[in-house]
Length: 130
Image (cartoon, rainbow, N blue to C red; front, top):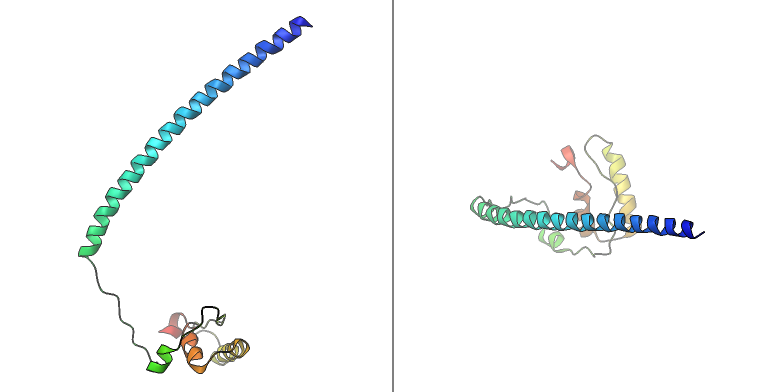
């Protein structure tokens, strides 16, 4: 029995030494990854600084979009809790079906005519938007 306990202790010590070696290797790898991470962050900061300077030199003003809406429609505020229509129209679907679906959804959620005008544009994509 004593010999069995000594063998178990020896096996336990060997296992503990192996775990210590694994832990040391893991710590070394972690330190290496931290150094690499810091180097990448430094490079990114340096690169971003250059990009920001380049971007300032090449800045073009945003494109202005004309709108068919009157000032009163443009000034209508859409509440942040308002759920807009979920329909979209690309120009390939039946326009009558799209208008019916849009009207039905807007009738369910309410909203003024001005809000309906503003939200209708958000249902158009692709050729229909053009």
